[in-house]
Length: 498
Image 1 (tube, rainbow, N blue to C red):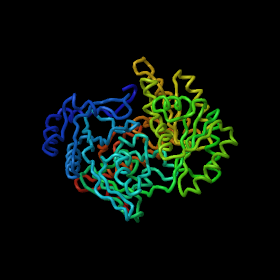
Image 2: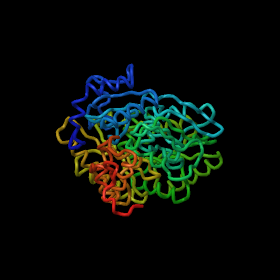
Image 3: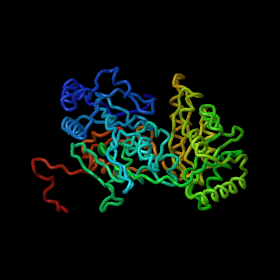
Image 4: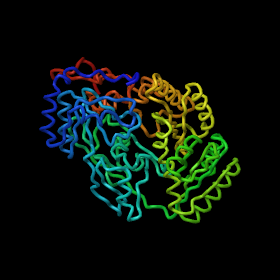
């Protein structure tokens, strides 16, 4: 696994593997437990296939009660648990542990309630992102967050990583579209946060859970808000002679007070890869391509297209084409959403990074990434959510060439450190997982990280849920100043207490 260091497996857990498997079969009967090497092989990694590890055992519960029993058993027996959705994570968030239960949530695949009056859907976490939109499309509704992997990624995984997508600029990330969850704590306790109402009083615990990467609990039900499809939606392709010019256009559109439904940017390498893969009709003589979608009333959309065209032409736009039909608009976006698989045709392996920067830093960052590409001798294609500065550089390498994975990892780390340097952050929507875990000190000091770990301790005092992810240094909760009661007596009983 390259230079990745994970928590040392617990010898006592490994020694009890046969008994643990037998106990789990009693909790999740039938085909709910997978324990042979061949059958566990598909679960050895998520979307970051450079890192692989077979789990101790795979458990596939089908009810919330089973999830509760499995977590309570793991808690009582000191066994780590790694929750997993569809395995599309691009940060190694679902990487198994040698001494851990891999808890697959794929059987939670039903939509439980569609409430058009309240504009909500209650769904199990194994339903795909696109599945929610398909379920409500006939009534003119949709679910706004739309990651490129939406055909496969699940809503539970989206909650874990706070996923975004091409329309997150105007309609928000997962956290802005989730109203409630049912989740199971490591103790086995089942809790509910939020619901169909828009706001809850008290602490924003729901906001804490969305994006918590499986460190705090296992989500078994999600309530999301759905939106009415806009009256009109049109996409515009704008081609530029340089990435800097395209970046300047992004900044100018936002500065003009225009908030597109989506605004994506692709560099020349990605434009050619996507066009060869899908034939979306992209211009091939440009160095950078912007896809800008405007939605709303038809008159407003037509007016905004004219304004975007005026801005683009003023910044040296070489080619401009607005969709004239829904089929053409979908084709424009299909090329963008196919960009990641398209790279598979031109490179045997790639790392997809995920950092976010202030929009004004875009030209500088793109120029610095070109310099890094020359330094490491590796190609790097850029496709990203330009409107909110969420970069997705794809670093191409060949895992069969000795040393190339390590070079790709170093290249990726330099990109993420650059994001922080210019005032950005390490991740926008893919999560920290193991990919960015060791870079966390570049953004947070030790006090920050300790406070984050204290939150985890409040939910998971023995650090059994997804250990080895997010935090660069593993600490026991006791080392963070938690108070322990021994024999019914507090330590130092003479000290005043709150």
